[in-house]
Amino acid sequence: MKTVWDFLNSREQAIILCSGLALLWVSLQRQLHPAVGNVLRAALHPRLSIPFGLMLAWVLIEVRVAASILPWTAGLSKTAVVWFLTTGVLLFGRLEEPTKNPHYFREKVIETLTLPAILGFYLDLYHFPVLAELGMLVAGSLVALVSVLASRAEHLAPVRRVANGLLASLGLTSVGYVTYRTVGEWGAMDKIGLMVEFALSAGLTVGLIPFVYFLTLFAHYESMFKRLEFRSEASWTHRLRCRVALFAGLRLRIPEVAGIGWDWLIRVREAETFEAACAIIRQYRARRAEIAIRRCEESDRLRRFAGVDGSDSQGFRLDRREFRETLRALEWVATCMHSSYHRRERYAADLMATLRGSSAFSDLPEPNGLEIEVSEDGQVWYAWRRAIPGWCFAIGGSRGRAETWRMDSAQPPSGFPGLHGCWGNSPGQFDAAPNWAYEERLAELVAE
Image 1 (spheres, helix red, strand yellow):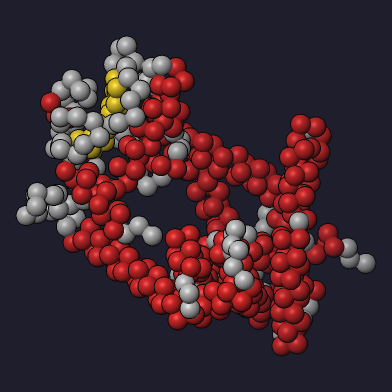
Image 2 (cartoon, helix red, strand yellow; image 1 turned 135 degrees about the horizontal axis):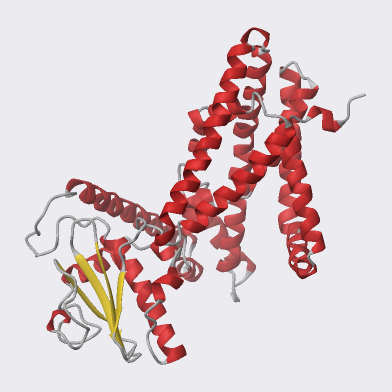
């Protein structure tokens, strides 16, 4: 009689063994027990467990429908379970993605038939023996961890290249092995069965998307209604009228429901009539449309003037690639410098080593090209970076003052702020940083 273990392939067995060893290690670490308890309590909380249970019920219905259409086998049951524990759980854990990407669900449907999905299915056709799979899994995980850690330090770039090369070698080894087995056993392969397995995985993904869509919509409507009624003393009829107006205006548009801010909700709450509330929601949607148009225009402008030297009629640079990303990074450096001064009464010359991997630098290439200069007494500093078009931006400060100096020029600063004329007349002003000021005005225009 076959056991569940016999239905698993060697890769799945290796994953279970690794997971079991990891759980055993965690159980032996007493200091981790409180954190594990917190995770379990969060997972069992009704706000998470009930939606997850509903998703499981939805998937069971999908499987029941699939079983009535396809020639069902024990292998398809395993395929459905593996799909649920991987793709299904991943979709459930990314409920915030549709708020950032209005085409998220469409892309997910298309993704089920793209090359990465087909390649993943292809690599799962054949597997190494379980011990080899176990070794490759452990080695691949460790090498991937080394690659991630090495990416946070410029001096470890050679280590990252080696790690990435090893990962590529593991991938090519798997492709070569599967191809060798496929060519050699082509006549004996159950091609119809494999097509059914692939169709089942793709169909379960497509079938789950409506559930994820309405669960995401429900979660954001619930959050919006709670914010709407926070500390509200209005009658239940007024609150109901506001809810109906919001639903009538926003309907099933997840990004608009998730993106509405406090100021708009307060205006809706203070509207005296249903028509007035609806008019405010129309204004909100028009504002979002206007912002979307401006963002498209700005993206088009960046593409159109890429590589074009010179300035426009107002003196602002035409090629503005990486300007916004550079300013964001420099502002974060200034915040951290200000904090370091108040802790040690001097600016930190080694700040960049601490900030490696910061999300403020995520839109910049590696190495990011940021340079920091601190005076010998630690009382004056500046940081600068040259963007793609060759234009330099700089920010600096002195003696812990909240006001920062800013400048932008074709060349980096020639001295410290307040001690050299390239920084302008006073901190907090933009007389030496016209492109910086212009970029901040553009950012305000496209802000939500």
